[in-house]
Length: 344
Image (cartoon, rainbow, N blue to C red; front, side):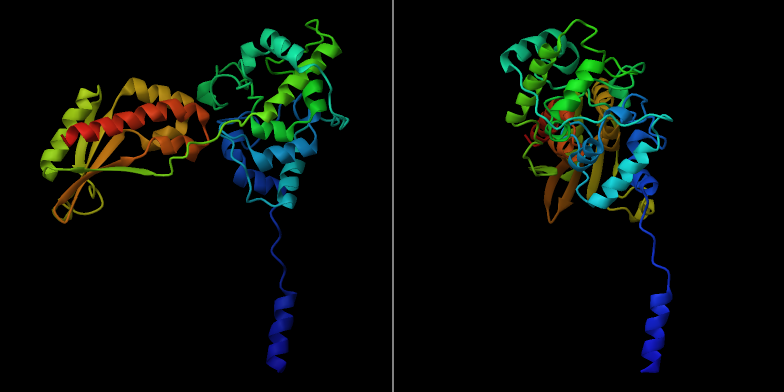
């Protein structure tokens, strides 16, 4: 019994592991995109002098929690409320000395949605898109001019609308945001009533469904071939060239994993590339490079030859990037077309 009590007292005397602080949590979850110092990278800069003082803790917390569906930033559902608040506190440490967070009313803005729609088309659509879909691209560095710290955000995004209050949107329109292309609409000649109308129109986006990832849950494409493995490999190469792709190489699936004499002879990969297409895709999202060059794997199992590839339409869902929907659909058609032609 004394031994048990001795062990218990020893355990109780051990120091408890400290919970990660805001800086550590930011480094683990945010820095890879927003930069270690919040000055941006793949993601937009957070340490803009005019940004942090103009947004509430609630806005920052809701943005972390909900993310931006279809705009690269994921929803951080795995973080606790306390962890999110710790990250928010860390972001506040970047505010300019002496600056204070603006205090905003929770009162809803009441305006004329129809009139606001016309004003939006006249004043806002050139940057934020005709339907509030945001500037072209997703905010990643390669998809915006290098002289701009951010691209115009998507205002019809469900994550933005869940985080931003009416008063925050109104304040941004009235004051603009230094360091970005967003200028004060009061200085451009709009009245407060005009701005209320625009805010009401932006809020009306919440009634729309917003972007949702494709519902194709199949991560892999697969098709049978009536030919031998060697014949199928050659047929895939011919079909890829016929689709205006250049063959990069063809090798055993186990190349580099085993000695050449021990590699399986029943699994080969054909790598092919269209450099113009790759450049366009990388401009939308550099992470696409993980799946480049394009490839189709040909395997033989129990006398049946199969062709397999990743499903490109799965990538926009995997990467939370609406901008990839169209090129992923195009690449899906390419993969299916190559495999169909190779199996004729």
